[in-house]
Amino acid sequence: MLALLALGAAAPAGAQVASASAGAARPASAAAPLPPAVQVPRLAGRLQAADLGLVINLDDPASVAVGAHYIAARGLSPKQVLRLRLPVRPVLDEGEFNGLVQAIQRHFGPETQALALAWNAPYAVGCNALTGALTLGYDGALCRNSCGVSRVSRYFNHATHRPQAALGLRPAMLLAAPSVPAAIAMIDRGVASDGQLALRGRPPVTAQMLLTDDAPRRVRTVLYPPPGLRRSVGVDVQWRPASELPQARRVLVAITGSVQAPVVPSPDWVPGGLGDHLTSYGGDLLGTHGQGTALDWIASGATASHGSVSEPCNHLQKFPHPQVLLGHYAQGATAIEAYWKSVAWPQQSLFIGEPLAAPFSPRSPGPVPQAPRGPSAPSPAPALQPLRPAPPASAASSAAASPARTAPSSVAG
Image (tube, rainbow, N blue to C red):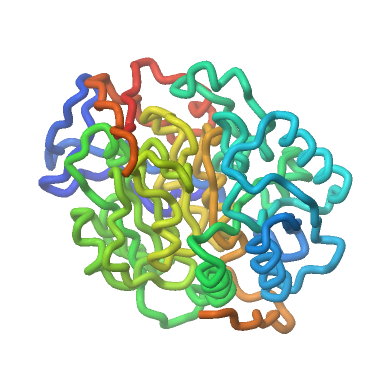
């Protein structure tokens, strides 16, 4: 096991840490230690283009265009591509979802380890994220109380780079972006990122752990790795107010908790950048909830993001664990692996981006496929409930199965 990114350390003076005993938050004391380092397993490989299956919706012209670009960008073979017809709307019903699952099972064999879906919508089935349901199976019972404990992912903080072979699951990610040109640019950033941070002598990149005064949404602060330069991987972990993200340089990762993504003006992303904000509906890409979504991160120049499609409450297990995310990515994992392995309860998790981006992994031998160049008022939200936030997720994946012992807060509004 590898403790890459954190050594139990004091939070920076003035940082805000969610209280475990009240709905309010307290200032972090310089003497108050963060949880011990998360033990991230040492990785022996990563997903390759040959491991990926691509699904294209023929009833969605944008899906056809984005899918064609992705085939060229990653050099996918015909057998790696499934073309079908789906409703072009945010939420599938259970019957439509089952039809999609059956088509995927018929087309892709055991060699396919992960899935890319070339569309913005559909992105949910009931209260489940489409990516969560395709990977773990649909959980209709969760929709009776979407704030409840959801299925535990055996993929959480796992070393394997063969999830279908080792665990019987295929992580999925949407090639979603605000427009076709934005999706093409996102794909190109992913391809351009490959191996760029594995080069000797390159300047450090930064991991931005962002601070806000939004008590229900800033609960991940207790999981932030301590600030400082990790020389072995060339990552400088920085804690700063979320409002200062646009001033940050060479951003690889940005993590925060807020209603909106703090990405205007856009940060200085490096290719392969990952960013997300903890809020209720960050994965409801086309919803009218008034919250920022994962699409905002992609529009700003990130290469992948995460959000919840239905009210999750602020269980830490339902959102990316910053140390696990960075610990896997900095070892050479792809974006889809790093993001999926960082969420313990991902049933409501929508993962979007270019799945194969791998900035820390040396380029595979042989020529890299070259992508063709593409063209460059909501309803009032319910009031926050003054409930106690969920306790921190355990550093060990065994604790991921433990339900929160306190009533988590809604993070709607």
